[in-house]
Each structure stands twice: as C-alpha cells, then as structure tokens.
Image (tube, rainbow, N blue to C red; front, top):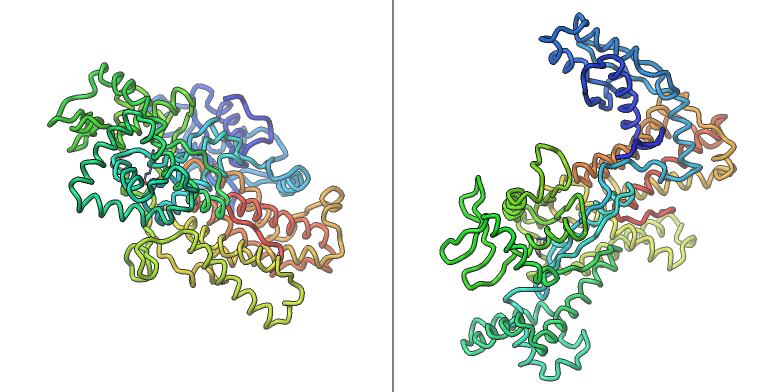
Length: 593
Ligand code: ARG
C-alpha cells in the first residue's frame, strides 16, 4: 500500500496517522498500531487508547514510564503540531482525548463543498473485489431472498466503488443443473416451434417450471427422457444447447426487468460459465490429497464438520460446491480479486464455511487470523417475514413478484402524496411527471431502506404501512428531511454556489460544531460499513445526521440571521452528504416533497 497523501482518507485515518507518529516518538522500540476511536464523552472528539496496552506490554521489560497515565501524557505531548488538533488531554488510566480544531473541521467541510464529496472517499486496503450477489436460479422463482441479496449486494458495491475499489459485480445465476433436462423436454413437447418463439411466448417461466415438474413426477417415460436430456445437454449436443440457451434467455429477460426497476448493474457469469473449469480444479485438489472417496461420492473432509463437502456426486455429476470451488479458483487466479464476497441468505452459511475451509486447506487463502488478502466473506441475511410472522408471501400466491412489490410501494406513496398535496392546496405546483418521479423515488426507496436499515442477519417484517410512514427511521422520513433542507436553501436570497467559494463556515454554536463533526465522519462510516460489510451502518449514520440537523435547525436560525452565509453552507453540506448516502443506498433523493 502506498502512503496516503496528507489530508486523504477518513478523519479517523488522519488522526491515526498523527498518533502513529507520536507513538514512534514515544516508544521507538515498540512496533504498535495506533488505536483510535470516536469519543462519546465531552472531553474530546477522538480518543487514542494505546497507553494501557503499551503499559501492560512494557511492564515486564521495564519502560521508563511510571504508569499508563504517564505513557498517555507522552503520547499527547508527542502529537505533531498541526492544524488538525486543537488540544489533547489525558484521562483516567491513560486515555488520550483529542479535540479537533474547529477551523480545520470547517475547512474540511468547505473543501468538500468546492471539490465534491469524492474527496471524502475513505482509503481501503483492497483494490479489486468480486461481489457475488442477487444470483437467482433460472426458471425457479426469484423470491424475496433474492431481492434482499440484490439490494444488499448493490449497496455494498456502491460503497466500495465510492471508495475507489474496483468491483466485479457478479450474478452467479443457477443456470446449470439437472432441472434443465425436464425443462428442455417440456419445451420440446409444449412448443414444437420453440426455435421461433420470442421470449414472451412461453409466458410465465415459473408456471412453466411447475408444469414441467408435475409432468416429470407423474410420467415415468417423460422422466426418462428428461434424464437423457441432461446427458445430451452436458455432452454439448447442438439442439439441447440451443433449447437451454432459449430458456436462460427468457429467464434473463425477467430478471433484467427487476434489475432495471431497482437500477442495479450486474454482470452475469452463471454456474455454467465455471463448468469447464471444474475438472482441472478438482484434479489439482485431488493431487494435493484433499479429495477422498466416500460412499461412492468424491468428497473433502473438513475439520469441525460432521459431513464432508461433496464435490462429485455419486452419479458422477458436479454440484453447487464443485461449481463454487471452480468459481473461486477463477476469481482468485484469472480475475485476481483480493476479496471475494458472497451475498446469500444465512441458510447457506454452512456451505460457505465448508468451501472456504476447503480453499484454505488447498492453500488458496491465508489463515483468516493473519488478516491478509486474498480473503473470502459470506454476507448472510435473515428472512423476510409477513405480518403473520411467517415467511413472506403475497395474498394467496406462493411467490412474491418483486415487480409487483415495487409497484405497490409506488402507488401507495403516490396516493399519500396526492392526498397531502391536495389537503394543503399545493397540488397546483406539481406536474404529473414530478408526481410520478417522486412517488417512484419515495416508494422504491422505502422498500430498499426497510431492508437495509436492519442488521442484515436478523429477520425483518415486510410492512408497507411501516416502511411508508413519514415518522421514525424510514426512507420517507429521510426524504422529507432532505427536501426540507433543500427548501431552506431555496428560501434564502443568498446564492449558495457563490458562498461555497466566497463564504466561510464558522462552527461557533455548539449545535453547529456537533453537526460539523458528524458531517466529517462520513468517510469513516463508509469505511466501517465496507470493512464489516454492513449497509445498516450507513443507514444509522444517515438517520442520526438528519436528527442532528434538526437539532441544529431548531436552535440556530438560518434564513434572516447574521450567520446566514455560514449556516446556509452547513445546510448545503448536510444535503450533499445525505444525497450521497441515498446514492450509496440506491435511493433517488427528492428535492421537494
Ligand atoms: N443461486 C443461489 C441461490 O439462489 C445463490 C448463489 C450464490 N453464489 C454462489 N457463488 N454460491 O441460492
């Protein structure tokens, strides 16, 4: 990693850099990482917690310090003189409390306003990430679980991309497997002219899947043909490959519609893509002695697991795990990714656990304790529940159509918006186009935010009423908060664009200072959300930011006050940061509501 330019990276990173210099001066003989946290108390804004650890480490070898507090004092004293830190003091057993300089905070905000929010990108220790998300199965239902994977994965991708990390967005669709035999045979039977069919002609693929499954279960002769079809497909027979392609294409069209609605970019590299690599990858593992024979199957035994990882089934076919091993090999060796991230429901945790361990046994990945790259992570998430506390279903149908969900969210938010605008006589200020765009942004945003705001591992209850409420921690509330700030800025007679260059932010009032400090934490929040793969961290920040803005706005008059130029810039900075949060969450911000 190259040394970062001065002033680059999150505030926490910059404080850490300063602390690192101080540590080098304080304890030159010890190699120690700076420990810096945000401070919640009133004595500082950030805190260095190295003294206690150094003390207990140095005790035996006899340092020249009398106690941990003395180490803390020395760390505080040795902090390089700079415009970042106003003062540092030591509390208790050696916590070094650091107070940031108000003028530095103000300048950092102003620089961002002039040069753009990208200057607040954190610096992450990784250059290329493979993000495997969404990944529905062809001809099977794309269920709400896939919606979660799509939304969570897209946000992670956006956060990494914002942080200048290259992201390979991979859709690992289930486009290979024994179900294709039955689908292909059913296609031949139902649609003799299948080659000429457009992608709409078959109608609903899920219905098609069900019907073919029924045929498969009921008719032994059909079943036989279906099983032969798998062999012929995998043997590469032209007609079977063409039929397979056709079915994939129909599925792809359906998926793409959802991705378009959600504004999600993905590159499809389905299971079939990795199929040709499986034999050579298994061959390598085999020559390392990792693969054994067990009850007719070929398996990898993994420490801590009762059952082995099956990599070749008893019938000689490959499976989910063999594909994942080949895909991981490809991602590491061909795509040269340093971090490979998989977003699926927690139900698949064991699968990932086992195959990550297998990769470590093969020496593909270092021991996670070493905290080195390349590494793999499974981003698991909980279930979506209905009001009845059971797995979410809509009405009587078994599957939840994602497009329908989004549509409903939009139309509900539209009727609420219409009602409110009619009540307060403002409907005349809105064009149809504006109404449509706004309800779409609010409705879709509500669905995404309701998913992202929870810790992803917990189950959450899908409720339109809750997610579309304008109170509490919802996207609707946040959209209102953002639109209000925009309206404050519009109300002022001052030109905010001009102020950015000519004006000056001062953080004299305590609520201004608190807001300013929170704004500049933006980069470290994105950093934390990326490091821990937790979009909820960003949601929490966004919500807190809007609360802090409210406090500021309640206590500090903006328009018409002597401080108007400075406070208007704080409004603008808050709006810019909120918009960037929305952007990372895949939500379109609205400017009037
Ligand atoms: N198709 C799988 C499913 O629907 C998800 C695939 C996740 N990615 C992977 N490399 N295993 O559950």
